[in-house]
Length: 202
Image (tube, rainbow, N blue to C red; front, side):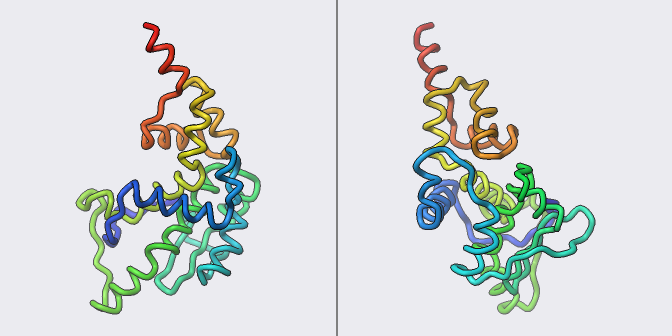
C-alpha cells in the first residue's frame, strides 16, 4: 500500500462512524466474525461481496512499481498480483491492503466521481494540510483495522490476556501484524483487564 502525499479531501468520517460502518458490514456478511475472535475472509469479501453486493469491479492488475492497490473513479478496485497472492497465504500487510483498498471502493469512488463531474478536475491536497477525518487514506486505514479486528472481539481478548501478550495473540488470531494490533489497541484505548486488576492492587 503505497500512499500518496497528495489526496482529494473526502466527506468527514469520525472514528465512531467508521466503527459503526465496519460492524454493520461484518454483521451483514460475516456474522460469525462477531461471535468469536477469528480471521476475516479478506479475499472472499474482495472477490465476491464487493462485486455481487456493491457492484464494484475488483481484481488483480499490473500496477506501477511499489503500488500495492489502486481504486479508480469508474469503480475498479485493483490490487497487485503480489498483494493478492500475499493475502491468499495470510501475509498481514497484504490482507490489510486488500481491505484498505476495498474501503476506497465502497466509500470514496462516488465522491471522487461526483467531484470530477461537478468541477471537471480532481483537486489534490497535501495530506498534512487536511484534517485526518477528511483524509481518504486515514479513513481506509481505520476501516481496515476495524474490519480485521472488530472492537467487541478485541475487548473480549483483552479480558483474558496481559497487555504485553495481547498484540501477539491478536496478530495470531486475526492474521494481522503486531504493529497493526498495537495501533488498534491504541485507537480503542484498550488495556487488558489483567493489567487493570494488578494496578488496582498497587
